[in-house]
Image 1 (tube, rainbow over the protein chains, first blue to last red):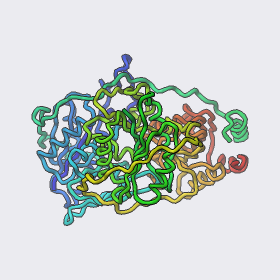
Image 2 (image 1 turned 180 degrees about the horizontal axis):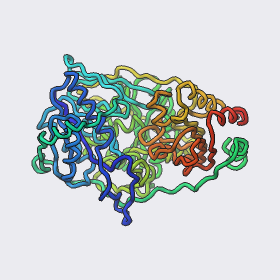
Image 3 (image 1 turned 45 degrees about the horizontal axis):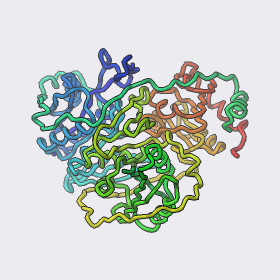
Image 4 (image 1 turned 90 degrees about the vertical axis):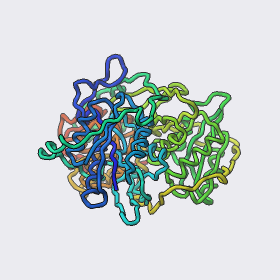
Length: 251
Length: 328
């Protein structure tokens, strides 16, 4: 069974973002970019499935400008067998990405498509659900545990839901999106980084996949959130209890 | 044209987050549009919830009920098909669900079936097609315009649309309840619900509690975390935790407050031993009053706290337990 993993290049999670002065978006030039942390977890899960014999091949895919190749290279260094880069403009909305993923799935025919539950830039949390809908595949979103039964061609997925855990059984092929606690992604070692340089990255165009860029969304503006008024540092518990009671009136 | 709210019910009543979704839908209504509620499930509690929903809010004009064993569990596959079916019959201009683990799971899938881009985690509605949502863990706000064809599909953050006085105990006349015709409903999906594990708790729900007490990594152990629980009990509060505390195994993961956990906006938020990572602040910055207790005077949490106390939480919590008044 092949596993396809979707990977997004985003502003590194440790970077303090700056909003562009013309309010068109967030500054990304000369900013450290990395693989979206949830995508790292998705890739790690696929690699472990391959190591345990459940999967035969792990394909990393990404869409966007040329720089996405760097992120795919990181994925190859972590252990993916090969990669596909769909050459596209940088602003792709989730529905377009879902359509591109569907087209790639039809080419590669994987048994599992694994994605991060959300990207830490737009925080949309949509793409996995949408591609599952487009493919009419079952979905296991926000997964914290995945067990694949190779014989039965099914995956048992524990999902993090409000108030607890939900366990689903999905017939393969299926879409899984990863939550934080699914696993701890590995680091790429130096020998593997060297090895990754010779692994293949196939380039594809939007036209080849027959997906157009029409979008039904436009960004009007991006602004800074309102700043909270600076508070006060108190000197004792007595003072805190007094403030909560007599100034804030919350207890 | 009307708006459809995908509602959830529990124990024969609409959930608090569904009432917030109705509140958000109310902001989209003009005088010639209507608001429909969609409820699905199986059995008497569904019909009971539908009867209550029929008089829950003055803006609601009809309740649609899909009663079938297929909807006993909130599986995305049948639910997305149901939304698709209901849209084909009703031709709604907007479809809204709460931005919780239910809405986040099913609404984007339904949107893909309808070939529209959903807008998730909406915190403000500026116009009928223009919405504000946080990006980058709440470090920026993005105003998005929907330019596609109907329906415009949203998930809304419940804490941003508090339930107003209109719906609290309105004695409006019940609106009609219609059963959704499921005779054309196709049943081809390949997922099964196995089980649901819920954390039984006497405490109020984290998402809607009036007071939230949160502990961070500085608690050092699950045993010590009981101090947070004791304080929460005294104040009738919900317990929250940082990602670090959850990852360290002090508490279960559904207590995590932050960008990828729960978003809360209580009247009082008290953070103990929480440094204030941006991802955590994203989950609680809309709280009305924030109290922070931390040993490190430079911890970023103090930049958003209304009241800060620099000190050892293992001394401060016992003192608070002694000096805070019992909950009313």
